[in-house]
Structures are given as structure tokens and as C-alpha cells.
Length: 330
Ligand SMILES: Cc1cc2nc3c(=O)[nH]c(=O)nc-3n(C[C@H](O)[C@H](O)[C@H](O)COP(=O)(O)OP(=O)(O)OC[C@H]3O[C@@H](n4cnc5c(N)ncnc54)[C@H](O)[C@@H]3O)c2cc1C
Image 1 (cartoon, rainbow, N blue to C red):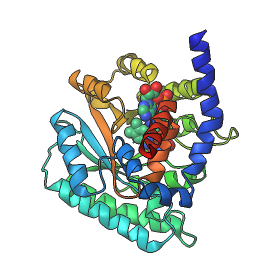
Image 2: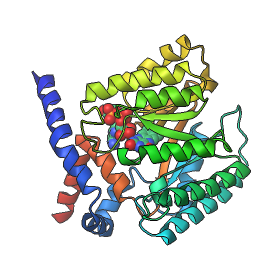
Image 3: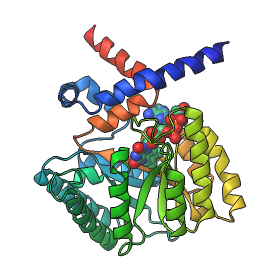
Image 4: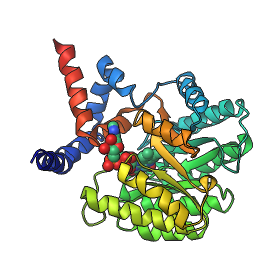
């Protein structure tokens, strides 16, 4: 009875609250208000370690000391001005130069340092030549990453950008075959994309997907998304690429060892990935067991969209945030 109630409360959250929260992630007015509130910043720090390179480097050092690898994201998305895209490129180049001074050598072919980037922050949505500008900016970042021995992975955004993003990634992989990208299991097209990229030996970060997508293009029920994830992961494991299992879901994590075994893979042939601040004990358990585990660590001042997507993923996060706001008023 209690678990049935919990399941239906979760469904109400998924169908009603989540779309409303995700709509708020695109509101400029709410963003400006939220970014001004100090209390919001305190809650944000659970998911975003800080705003500066120094902040993020402290987290990187701690994660590396505990045997975890990192993927660092300079926060920002939906850029509407060429100058903002240029600023983002400069931030990534500065970050990569700083990471280069760590002189980390890979213990296998797996590079411990990685940056993640959103093509919309590099100008993809600019009205004139957006796709070309984003591609050229990503090329500049990949060149620098190659020089300092870091990997780059391109994030997945809402489904209207998927064709453009994958076309840029295909193009850049001709010169940087180590370039990875994210595929979202909630999209109905993704099994086909997994088969294509797995056949070409690509590094693919498979996640469930964090945007509010229509039923015409995406599975919307939790169980359907998980089933799709497991089918997509099997396609990646069966191919010649490097699967990156980006999920905190115990049902998915538990399914991985058998898939790895059945596809004759070893610990160097895939990695687990989780977000900074989520299931820290599980991250450590997987790393202590000898697996490659990479943590996605975002930093910067433009944390609003990222933070709201984390709130939308879990009812408890919303409760925690609202309670913190209420306590502040008393
Ligand atoms: C490395 C990485 C990169 C990602 N990149 C992208 C991307 O480019 N594009 C994109 O659309 N999505 C991205 N995501 C987000 C992803 O799509 C999901 O929204 C998110 O990972 C939650 O899905 P889940 O697989 O963890 O499963 P869920 O079923 O959502 O969660 C399983 C369990 O994990 C824990 N958990 C999950 N989320 C939270 C949270 N926010 N707070 C606290 N606990 C939580 C809870 O215990 C929950 O029960 C990324 C995720 C990871 C791990």
C-alpha cells in the first residue's frame, strides 16, 4: 500500500511537477532572481562546487585522490551572442592549459582528465552560421585538449539540436577520433544512433536525458526509459567503441557487470559516470572495486539551467530546496 502510494506520487511528480520545473529552467526572469539569492547558492553548491577555476580544481584534486576521474563542464547554454561564445571558448582554453600543468599520464589508453561542452554555449543557435560557428569553436577546444592530453565529450541538449550536434561530432571525429558525445536513452531514435556510433568505435556517454521532450520523440515513463537505456547500452557494449555508463540508477548499474562479461570487455573497455554531488558513496564503491569512474564536475556563474534540471530529477531535491527557502524566511 505504502509503496503503491510512493509510486503514484512519483508519477504525479514526473507528469506534472517535472515539466513545470523544466519550463522554469528556461525563464530568464526566474534565473536572474535565483542567481541573486544567497540561499539558492548554498543549495547549488551540492551540485556545483564553485564559480572559479580554483574552486573546480580543489574538487578535481579531491576526486583524483580518491581514484575517480573527472569531466569538467564550464556552465553556460543557449548563447545568443557571438562574443559570449568566444568568452566560453577562452574559458575552456584557460581550463585546459591549467589541467595540462597537472601532467597526468593515463594508466591505460583511458585519459583521466576530460572536459564536457555544450554546443549551444559555443554558438550553435546563433541565427547566422550558428552550426559552423559552434563547429569551429569546438575544433579550437579539441586541438588544445589534444595538446594537453585531455578528452572532450559533447553534451546532449534538447531534441531539436540532436541532428546538428551529431553532424558536428561526426565531422570532428575524422580529425579527433577520441572525441565523445552524449546520447539520451529517452529519445526513440537513440538505439539507431548507438548502433551507428558503436560501429564506428566512438566514445559514447549514455544517459537517460534531462529535458522535457514530447511523446512524439521520447519515452516519458520511467520504466520505458530504463528499458530503452538497457537496450542502448547493450548495443554500445556489443560494438567496438568505448561505452560510458552515465547513470545513478541501481537497476542500470547492477546490469553492467553481466553485459561487460557477455561482450568480452574488461575494466579498461568502459567506464561508469555520475554527476558531482550525487551518490558519492556509490561512486567510491565502484572506484574502490577497480572500475574507471568519472565524475561530471560543472563550474561557473551560469549554474541556473543545470541546477534546475537536477531539482527536476528528484522530488526530494525540490522539497529540500523549498524547505531551505522557508527556513530562511523565518
Ligand atoms: C555524467 C553525466 C552526464 C550527463 N549529461 C547529460 C547530457 O548531456 N544531456 C542530458 O540530457 N542529460 C545528461 N545527464 C543527466 C541524465 O540524463 C539524467 O537526467 C540523470 O542522470 C538522472 O538519471 P539517472 O540515470 O541517474 O536515473 P534516475 O532514475 O533519474 O535516478 C536514479 C537514482 O539516482 C539518484 N539521483 C538521480 N538524479 C538525482 C538528483 N538530481 N539528485 C539526487 N539524486 C539523484 C537517486 O537516488 C535516484 O533514485 C547526465 C548524467 C550524467 C551522470
